[in-house]
Length: 362
Ligand code: AK6
Image (cartoon, rainbow, N blue to C red; front, side, top):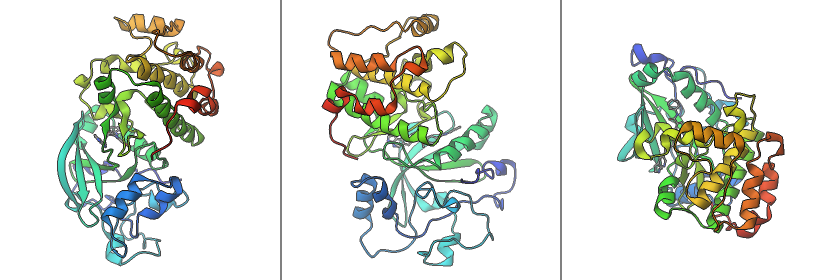
């Protein structure tokens, strides 16, 4: 288990040389762990393009690339000893903290409530990332420091080809920086708007990728990923990446349905104030599949009250163009009783998914 990054944000009102401000550099090559996840990782391909063999020096590395190695996810306090990697090239590299100086900053990728996301490149490795800049004052005002800490803690335990990586975080006096995986093909909801809806092959492919990512999350006891289209990004090969917290990237007005988007994806048990578990994600998966196929979520209505009503009644209707096998899958996901919903394993094995999904590109 990684330590909670509890030193985060503490230096808001203290000096810039807060001794607890601690972010570490990972020495050694980054590509080794990519292969464990996927044989054709785009990150690893990019790494190889940008890091000729034999190049040494510090390399940006996922905080979560080694679940068995808690030191890699825990902040390192100055003076707490040397970094454990045998590949350490110098004590300087082991001690080096990330700062803004380590990055060339490029174009903005998105605006958010607490700050913006920029394309950025780590200077020494030329590794391209998305750098999210959050203002401590705004985080404090909104009372979300704890939420951010929790998100970082969760994220540090996740490593999956269809979940956006959090590589590192660091901070200065006024800001917190999240070093995130860059998803070159951008936001999925824009693709959906451009295309109105996706065909069954594309939908089945996304559904397979979502399901495998959710299965991974559930195996780590992480539930309720906010899986509406706004929170999904596309990698270099068009593969899907769950990039939660879309709300803090996009302005609320970036999409008409954003304000009621959370309602559209809520399962009956949450609306009805009942206890809920990981099966809420299976419901959301059904809503997502419908929205991909149809172009709008299944229970959309004029008012929130009407949406709630339609959800609790599971008032589900399909346009004629949706095939029977696709309807079969969505109907089995959108069951009022959480225990009646198809398991994630059965989603992966569903005939419509198996027949329509395109081979993995990630
Ligand atoms: C954008 C792109 C990449 C990257 C793991 C903030 C928070 C209070 C995240 C976050 C982890 C944490 C947070 C956000 C994300 C994103 C897009 C997604 O802000 N947490 C305040 C509490 C919690 O990911 N993820 O923000 S940022 C990115 C684009 C745009 C085009 N391509 N690739």
